[in-house]
Length: 219
Image 1 (cartoon, rainbow, N blue to C red):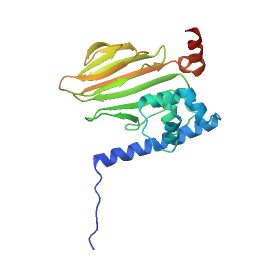
Image 2: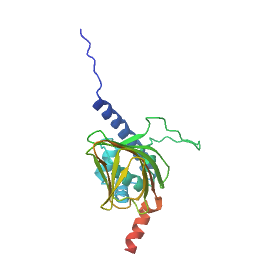
Image 3: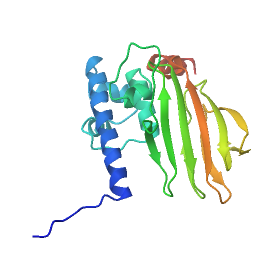
Image 4: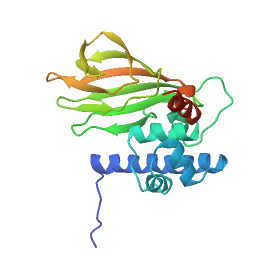
């Protein structure tokens, strides 16, 4: 009898990692929703995510985008880091994230990625991201909540940062501050991939459903 040896490919490894992440998100989302005694219908209204998608997320049958995770976190009154953390909690004032333990929440068609390295707890979102964009890749994002600020440092290549329809060329070694409470995008300029670090602060008050309702009444 000849033994069959299965060699795991990079695609298999990526799919496995995505499955583990989706499973962690499913457990965490269900725990938070039930802890707040919210029905799927209530959470759909608060988050702007359809009931069908919420059910698929909790059943680990969905691969939610960054935008969907942001809306879901806002509806639950937590940060994205809370949502993808898998429920780990520590009383220590220092949280250490080992190399390779960040959460890869976006995979580009040519090998690019967006990895959430570490983030704050609670409704006020403070996050540190690591991005890689290969030539020809572009990531488009919806407007974040009012007052959202991003700090970016380009480590390699040239980043094309587009905010509100205006594009800024950011070369290696340069830093930029951007108000991303409007549609924005990141793209790789030139033939070399771009690497950049990004810190994001999104005020919890601006993300809360109550604040959104007050804004609608004023307008």
